[in-house]
Image (cartoon, rainbow, N blue to C red; front, top):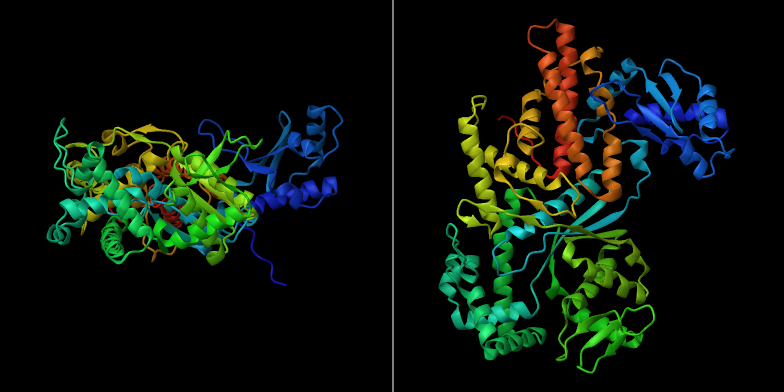
Length: 590
């Protein structure tokens, strides 16, 4: 039998758990998840792990004699120190453990050298997470429109979740569920027939369908098809009726309507791919509401058969979701003319995805205003007998306030990316420390996108936040620019042979922090919030920058230099791996 290597913090968790196992006569695994790494303190040397005795009592693992403090001290005194666990002492309802610094350094460097890109992923802690097939639906803009800046959050958050799940061993299906159906498209298509031009569509497709130019402090708009037809519809019943008629033709799959729809959809996906490429985002499936028209009708029939779909006095089709059946809470699935609604197609899409992908979980990433929609969606699926809906999850996010370029209010995502690149290029040209590079525009774009991502991921996703170009592009502080600079500055050539595992007192705060990486990934996987990983990487960057100032490589004795190179190589590996999970591409020079 081949023994698998125990990873980083899990080596120490297992060592502590074995002591608890011998003392209490329970399996070691009982204590693994109960042992938490303690956050690093810059002011004092803190313990490395703690065990909550109170938690063991509440779970019935230990008998409760009514005196928590006495039980904690008694258990702590029964545990023996050794050359790995050097110190054990009781706190208020917790037992603290401090491990050997030499053992700690050796374990971290050993795993860093062996695993590189998989560093931290083989942890016993992470093995406890459920694996399987994960569908992540994110981004999901509307076709025949330029990529609106409002879709940035869904795109980068969904990409983070997909990256995280994939790195943890899940089979991830990245899905872009395009808004390519519905009354709005009918209105646009009807408008194109009145105001559109095929030649302009070929020259600049999405700009022709929706062209909005905003000048400084004013809203002087050049309105083409999309905006013009919506204005016409507000004042002219006939225009709105034309949109309804075109959508009806789409639902009936009439040839001319379908041809125009296909043209708009193909143009849109082609244009969107260019933006996704800039962001470093890809999708396995480009789906859309249109894919589920026939299935939506089947869902309606199934709901009728099950007695769940009811017809109101207005002729609309609804599902009663109220606990008492008094229609105090219901969801509308059909208009009075029989055409489907967004939620009808979402039901069909969810059922279809389960049939095709047999997913173990499905995650929807949209803004928080759609919370009620997904609550109703999952509720209807469960009412239909689809118990897997319990494994569907909505990850909501808040709004970005004040996102502007120098020309004024932002409308399109391309404007944001162009602005980030331009500002970074200017900052890099003015900085005295900027290195010569082959493609400064590409570096500026990557660093600018990093800044956008870190700013977005700092806090709880559901919170709104105010956008500030000057703050997010600062070279110091908890910014994407500082993170990129630190990783690039300490990155090493892979040809360097770092073979000395020497312990250095200046790294005393960094090593315990590095080995908590698996806990950060575990926490991120549990609540799908990127803030844990962002906070970890920013703190590690500051610790690394400080260590780099105090631990020079150049001019040091060979053994010391090699040990320090190994230290920075390890830190660089962790930073780069964490950045990639966030959706950030590390740059080589800055």
